[in-house]
Amino acid sequence: QVQLVESGGGLVQPGGSLRLSCTASLSAFRINAMGWYRQAPGKQRELVANIYNSGSTNYADSVKGRFTISRDNAKNTVYLQMNSLKPEDTAVYYCNLRTVVASQYWGQGSQVTVSS
Image (tube, rainbow, N blue to C red; front, side):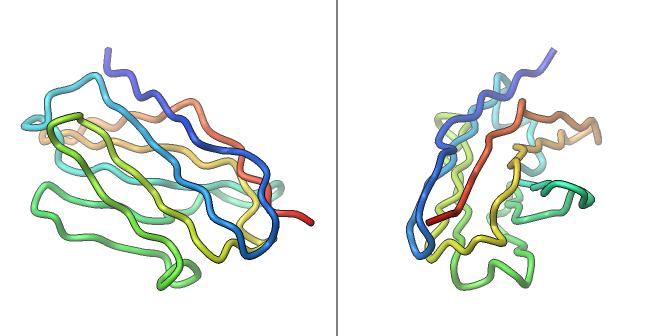
């Protein structure tokens, strides 16, 4: 069973920064992509950003220029650096992993609250 361990959520003021981390219990060569989704109250879960083995990345339009996803294959860890945070970024953020055989796994979720 693949486990994803998240850390780094919390409360931050508008304009502030947070960094989320997610470490997978799976060798990097078995991972196709890792990323982050978020779900705000009353809304559907949406993609925030993901990064493939090739290094290519995708971002939601709402976070482009503010969030940066990166990956450390030696540590099987993906990071999401979130800058210039806005109240509308408030959500539970979930780490996501897709394997090379198309299996998908989710982290436990990390609350991010942006409020003054």
